[in-house]
Length: 351
Figure 1 (spheres, rainbow, N blue to C red):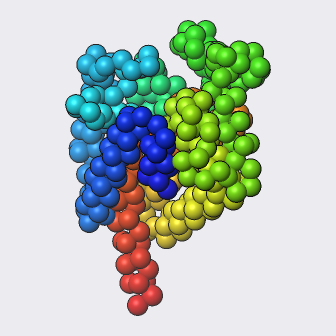
Figure 2 (cartoon, rainbow, N blue to C red):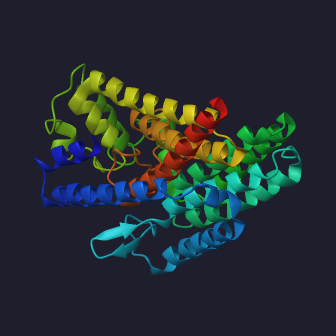
């Protein structure tokens, strides 16, 4: 469906959109190949050996530092390494590595996870890459890292008292971030979310055009490649941040319901795998992948509808972006192997 939308955008636009479709197709092939390869790799290797995970974590930090100095600034961000026409955003890899690290950490401490020191140590694993991502600056991806950590900690068994303390710290950090970390354009995005009519030709423009696109789709939509907001380029970043708005305009309410029905089945399957897992590492890893994809899907759709501030997050599997697509497929390859092991374990128990 994502490739179909990118192809539809290329029908009535310039050659750049054709490039998006071709490059995304290439990344889809790479991603499916990676998914197959990692589905054949025993997932117990990630659980049983700590040294490779630690090495991956520091390699990820090195990439996040390197991208600040050796990447080309695009739209005010230094977020990806460029290899000719292709790019790779290390923050996507950081999300997967953080899930592996947290699953490994809490699976070995599930009996005493209620202790505050485990909350603090796990938070340090998250805070270091999150701060580096904020330096790019990429607020949306930093939020995803925080939510992955919070979700896994909650599933591991956080005390209500610790949750309250974390919530208060989060609110305090939000106020500090407003004063010292957020860029002016990020503050304006939040301000225009509160008052969408504040700057209709400036910071509010994207949100207004997104709502027009979604509303004009009606019940059945205008058809593939026929959405005026995307076809006539009224909607900025229509191939990435606002692909949901383009989809809603072209396929209408029926198409949106169908899209989220597919996502619902997808998350239901992940929940089934979590329930069938035979150990805590597998459960926490699959849950982390589900959290990563779910929160990014939710935030992107809510952003396009004007229910959340615009953060620049893409819609998993639909938006153009090879790094996100590749890492999502790679993560699902590990999930496939975990699902296969869970199925084999069930058969042995029944026998």
